[in-house]
Length: 347
Ligand SMILES: Cc1cc2nc3c(=O)[nH]c(=O)nc-3n(C[C@H](O)[C@H](O)[C@H](O)COP(=O)(O)O)c2cc1C
Ligand SMILES: O=C(O)C(=O)c1ccccc1
Image (cartoon, rainbow, N blue to C red; front, side, top):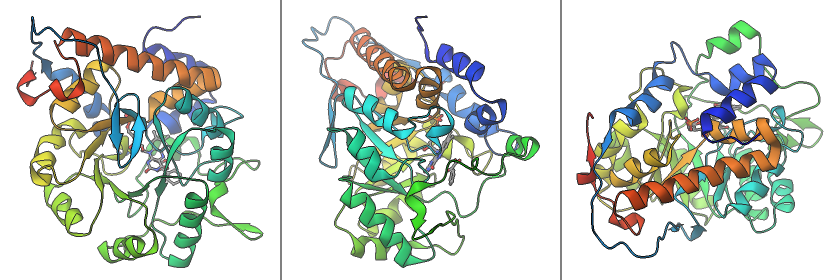
């Protein structure tokens, strides 16, 4: 069956997934106010197209920290892909490679990052990291990501503890089934838990900076002051994110956080965004407001659950086609033609 929108992929995924797993992927923290706000905020923004600008051949590629992507839509790091498809992150990475975009592999992947890379030759991979209080184990994982050929490290900073996911509590979904584990966390005979620690600080990030020459992206920045502090610590990009509404509930929508962070960063490093991107027009709004690119989390999971590698490829192709059409309708030939004057709030 042909699917025309991301919403249809979600419906197909919901039919196929174990209901507790669907809830894990779809849900968020508390009352899920932020989950809903992320999508609703995009819907509230209007786009003002420009006309008769003689836009020539369309160009949608971006280069981020030396990695090339054919479109400004990346695969956000999400955990546990093997709950959605037996090939798991291997399938996602192959689809990302076919779409010529960057996949950010989660530290909580159910296929080891080295095996993800081996399964998808030509894929541009970045690696998402939760800094561990045991810094020597953080280093072990960083070396695994480097050995796999990952080109950047994305440090998730919005998780000093796990968010309170009430759907998971209700469903009793607390851990992966027996046959799956977080493969990157293997340590000899055991698999370590991913530790979330409120004691982590910028000092830990400084030590990561000394540990590796890979560019570091800080993910989960909401406050403009934190964006400024991040610049002082030599980071290479900032990712505006509220973790898809899965950590602190009632954080404003990601796209509503964006303008103040773009202003605080002042062009010093690229600003990325995730949360609620479901349409090509959402991508354009974020870019017009100053994002260098966006990432999608749940839509990739829905593609994977609905149709494995082909499902993810379809989701990414759909987004790309929507970006191209919306860009043309806006009178733009390239992403740089977008500017904040083309976004009106609220519509
Ligand atoms: C099921 C699921 C698992 C996630 N796992 C991770 C993770 O392991 N690491 C991380 O930094 N973010 C994780 N995230 C957050 C995503 O990277 C991203 O911020 C969020 O999904 C973006 O919102 P969207 O789903 O509306 O696109 C996860 C999100 C979901 C939905
Ligand atoms: O579910 C999540 O959002 C997430 O970030 C996570 C973190 C650690 C382990 C599993 C999932």
